Structure formats: C-alpha cells, structure tokens
Length: 332
Image (cartoon, rainbow, N blue to C red):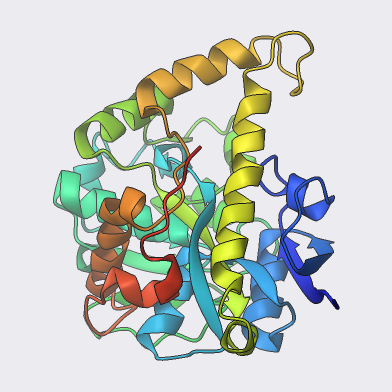
C-alpha cells in the first residue's frame, strides 16, 4: 500500500522532534520533515501554501478563520505555549508603576497580530482595565530595520490606533531613546540586554507574576496550533485523528524524558526537579492538547481577537479545528 507523503514544517522542539526524526510514525503516512523557525514557516504556509502539515501562529489562524479562508484546517495540537509577562518591556522614566499606567502610552510590537500581543492585550484589559483602544500601537522590526510588518494585511477599526514605524527605524532604538514608552517582544530587546538604565521589564519577577496569573485564571497561554491542507483531509478523512494521536504521543515522549534521572535528556542540572515543580503548579497535564482540555484558553483568545479588531465577531472555538478532532482527548 502506498503511503501518503506529508511535508511537515515545525520548529524542532522536544514535542515535535519524535515526528520529525521518525521515532514516532503516523499510520499510512510518510513524513517529509521541514524543521525551521516560526516566522519563515508561518509566512510560507500563509503566502505560498508550501506545506501539507504546518505549525501556525494561533492568532493568524484565528484571523484566517474569521475571514473564511479554508486552505487549511486546524488541529488542537498546541506545539507552543508560553506565559508572556516576561515579554513586556517599559521605560522607567514614564511613570509606569503598574500595567494600568500603560493607558495613554505608545507601545511597540513587531506585528499587531502576533499571538504574544493578543495575550498581553487581553491580560491588560482583563486584569488591569487597559483596553486595546487606550494605547497607541506602533509596529515594525525589533532590532532589524524594515523587518517587522504584518504577515497578513489587517483592516482594524478606527478606534484602534496602529501605525508602522519608519523602515529605517527599529522598536529597540525607539524604546532606548524614549520615542516609545514600552515594547512587547518575544525576545529581550538589545537595549535591555545591554543594561540600558531606563529600560526594564514591567514584571521584573515575571515567573512569580506568571504563576499568580495561572492560579487566578487557569490559563497557560496557547501560542501555536497545527494546520493540515484541507484537500488532503477531504481525500483522507482519517488524517486529522491520526495526526492528533501522533503529536500527542510525541509530546508524551517529551514529558517522560524530562523526568528521567539516570541520564539527563536535557542539558540542565535539575531538569527532573524543575519538571516536577512545574507540574505541581500546572497540574498533571501541563501541556494539554485537545479542544475540551483547552477550551477556556481558546475562548479567551477568540474574545481578545474580536476586541482587537482581528475578527469581526467572537467566533466559536469549534470553527478553528476539524470536526473529527473536537472530542479527541490528550492522554499525556
């Protein structure tokens, strides 16, 4: 029997590596691995339809679903999750003592539609009363001029103020010299790393802030999901379920590796202890796949997307994922 050949593009993490290197297989399928970095994978998938199966920004997937774009279908396989309190950097000379003080300020982000921004804007609104409309937004490259800009063209409501920075500028330079009051970034801006005295994290003890947020909200923010080419699903209705199960097995393998104490599988001295500490906070299924296990997080993201003007209305969680996966449960 001829196997279905599938190109798979995703970041090579402990959760995806067993599929990329063939340790875990998908019945009836042959995987053609394409490990890479997020921005390139997202761009090629959205603009070129380059891969059969692809890791994808959850916010971009939400935007596409809201627009009725159906080239791909989603799977509730959340290859990336991350708490994002660490991603908010501020000027210390602007009177920003609390996140509530960001109202009326000018904040930079590489892409307004980035999932990191979706979550932080939602947290600012829910926990600190700062609406997206209360901030002036600037998008552009963090530390490379001209590198920013939206991966999908946006048409935002008039009350959301978003303007691109000049192609010759960077968000980091504008934060460092005071033309921005704050920046949202998935990696530390160079000015922060260099110890610029007027640039700091909004949450210096971000781990404590993130644990407190989880205990209050029960949400471990979802960053990425998995997409599958719709024509393949139409031709092979069994495919979404088999892909979900394979990704769940790969993730279970990764979590098991963290607990091994005879030979550390990760280059950290106390990785098993750190994993146990994390599980004690997040619970037994500390990296859940499946719609039902993560419905509260998905619903929050869809509410945030509508509030931010990324979708015209709050869409139903089921619209994001293929119907055959709605009731699938993650056993890890």
